[in-house]
Amino acid sequence: MVHGGFVKIERNGVVYYAVSFLEGTGLARAAFTTRLGGVSAGEAAAMNFSFARKDEPENVRENYRRICAAAGFSTDRLVVSRQVHGTSIHEVTDNEIGRGIFDDFINVEADGLMTSKRGVALIKHTADCVPVYILDTGTPAIALAHAGWRGTLEGIAGVALRRMAENFGTKPADCMAAIGPSIGPCCFEVGQDIALAFESRFHGFWDR
Image 1 (cartoon, rainbow, N blue to C red):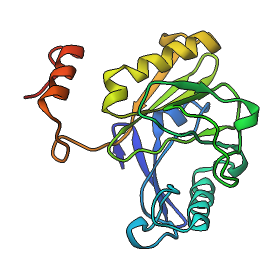
Image 2: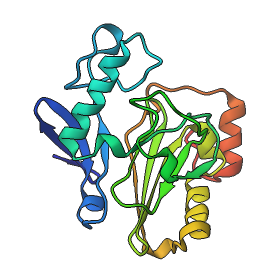
Image 3: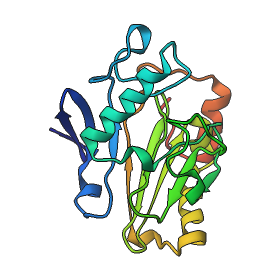
Image 4: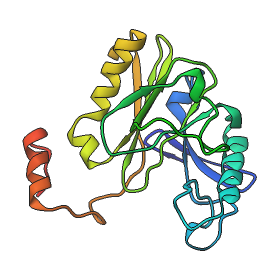
């Protein structure tokens, strides 16, 4: 089943969506998780990846093990950062690879991560907000951004491309991008001040 390039995959009870056209390059693997296939219970059931929820830390770690096994990621090559609803894009260093999930060490605050290192899995947590996947097929390099309304208003996707150009020599013409699932207009309301800010920033895209 395909939804704009996202293909539903189920392995060992774990359900996630792969980004087919990115994976088709043979350069990257990309996944958007669901809540199916994990071990968490209660309000966090079942595939919870947040340590901030009412959940046991070991349940969260087991959920990461399960999605990594299903999607083909290495648990010792995960990278996570604290999200602050900004536009900072952080280049992953060797010191950060494998940190933050199994050892509680997170020293980076950034809503976007990027790397040209092979075998590294970037992690972003989204619910209402939008995940933006970027693949530079030339370098190659990848970036993953968490775009809330603030980040979208401030152009986080463009910021990610500029940072990739600065750090990796990325050319936009070599890039492919995917916008992941997020909350929709049926379920999300904003005040007129935010609506007007978007109309000012993105002329003609505001649906009254």
